[in-house]
Figure 1: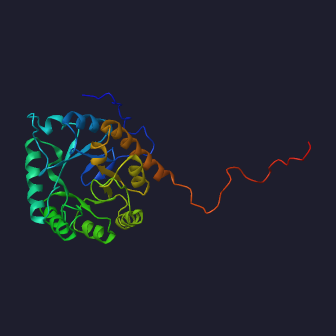
Figure 2: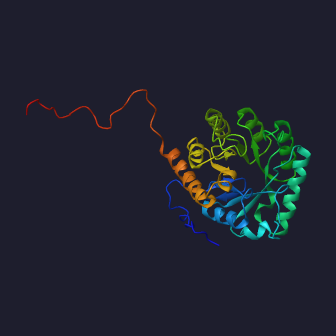
Figure 3: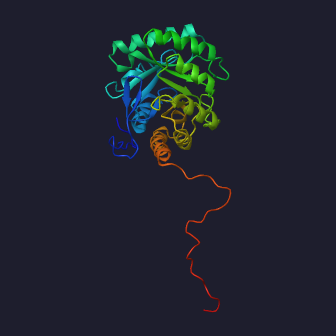
Amino acid sequence: MPSAHHVDAPPAGTEPGVTPFRIGSRTFTSRLLVGTGKYKDFPTMQAALDASGCEVVTVAVRRERLFNEKGQSLLEFIDTSRYTILPNTAGCFSAEDAVRVARLGRDILEQINNPGASWVKLEVLADKKTLLPDPVGTLEACRELVKDGFEVLCYTSDDPVMARHIKAAGAVSVMPAGSPIGSGQGVLNRNNIAIILEDLKAADPAYPVIVDAGVGNASDVSVAMELGADGVLLNTAVAHATDPVLMAHAMRHACVAGRQSALAGRIPKKLYASASSPWDGVMTVIPGE
């Protein structure tokens, strides 16, 4: 049900610069992808998803409680006719485990006829303390899942070299982290994200690069989009906000604003001031008059 903060998202095409983008074989209007974990309850999650204007929601196949203590199912609160579910392999620490979980997610979504059945957000983590991606396991799992017919959106670090390898392995989207998962530190290494965007889009400007992880507030989303990212995936920043639904609204607007800002083209940075009005033709004031 709509929350007290409910505001309908503007119709597609009414916002300048808000154009559809493709991830593999799928096309979406919203460039904000939102997770379903960590909310205090399912109704709050449902209202936040609505407020975000997102079209893609991620579900952790391995860790997500499909039923809570009240016997409520997560899927009861996700309108599968409205949202495309993106199953992810969060909580996996080996390529073998991630491949198995991805296949399990495919089986679940096939049973409910959700169009997300043939794709997966791949995460292979190195350890529980840092939650940094394991580059070797990630690449191994990516190759295996691509071979198995999955469209793989691959979570990785902000290492440009690793990003190249993942794209070459067949991932339909590379998803570099802005900062560690759930840290709220924003985009820590803007230069690396910019290099990844330049490298991966050199041969294919439409190749989607989605900043994933570390977002803390709306300005972080705008920064990622202003760098040229095609989208942002977030979860904790909304789920753990004091007011998750209001934060979801903010994230939606920030994603659009950042995209528009990137397309509009910022002014160059200068060391010294630059007057808004020209000095030529300035009126001369004669003392005493």
